[in-house]
Length: 264
Image 1: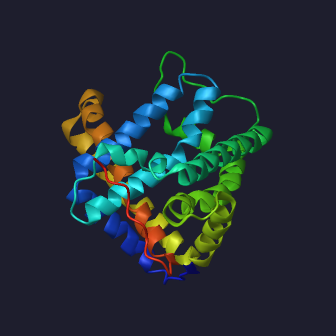
Image 2 (image 1 turned 90 degrees about the vertical axis):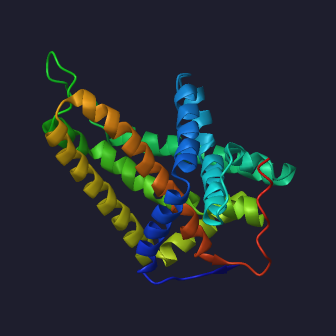
């Protein structure tokens, strides 16, 4: 396995490839993402244990969405069974993905612990008699030290697990080594990764601006709720579609990449 260091400009290309591939199969890709989010919502009903299981499934879901992206990129329809890709590659790969998921859950709880250590302990108050979120409330929440401490602690976790699912499943890299290789790859390609994040930030901001303009035209929160939720789902699905391209261009392998198990 050889690390590839890319030009920063490739980060924007990853954004465009993600959008282009998503638009080939928009309903399939957004449907797969919705299925995972629905599962997470159901699991989260169970306190602590459900949250831990949901967190442990994130690497497997990420791999499944990457496998779906590869199918869409090649002009094939991504089947729902691709979400189970992590559990269909044999006992060794399955154990590796389960261990990776457990490591992610532990890391996420540690990040939450860091945030709790720096939290001031006072919840953001809601205006009396309303549940509406105001700009002042958002500003107060963003300014909390606990939030920034958690984000800072999550950054190395995000970098370590960014490429790890693909390395573990498709290339047989042990989970601990995959975290190290992923961290190094993200840091070595920090220019491209920063432009990738900045590109998606701009896309999300422009989408929010357009939705705000649409809201001022059509009027009424009920109408906007019907429009906003599908758009948010599509945008989140489109972002996850672009993740595969960051992995594909960050590593070169001597042996050909194994095929994804058949979806049927």
